[in-house]
Image 1 (tube, rainbow, N blue to C red):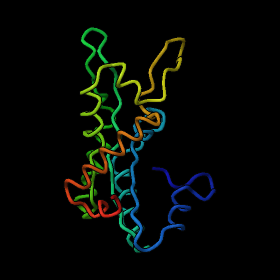
Image 2 (cartoon, helix red, strand yellow):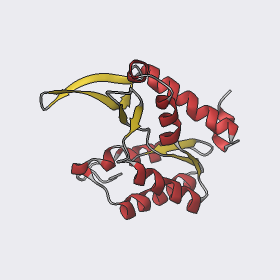
Image 3 (tube, rainbow, N blue to C red):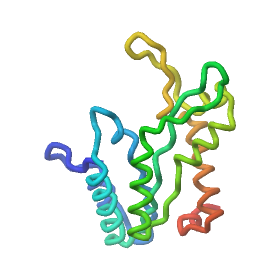
Length: 173
């Protein structure tokens, strides 16, 4: 969530400048923030989200917060999806700020976990960009969705927004 990048204009500042009254701004962080080398502590993380809500509203736009998409692995013996819980505290922090600031919240962690839990390993892996080798071991990237994964997760976002009658649902047919 670091918005200051060594004296450069941050991506957030660029996005803020482009916002127009009536826009919906979907904010989702927490994936890289949970990485051990980049760990952002929860109080700072929550303060940044509160700032996002205030700045988005000041531009006349509507914030929508999302928890991070899930990550995990499929069990070698039973083939069932096992969620990595490393991002859980970030999703909880986003939900808390959304409640405090009265911002619509979509729990992408739960939505994407439910999708993956209903799929076998091969089908679940099709939703991500693929295999990579790290430290000589083949691993599977369950962080970056493939085009099919982005479509499936986007559909889940839209369905949840419509089912719960969130304000952002108005922009989807």
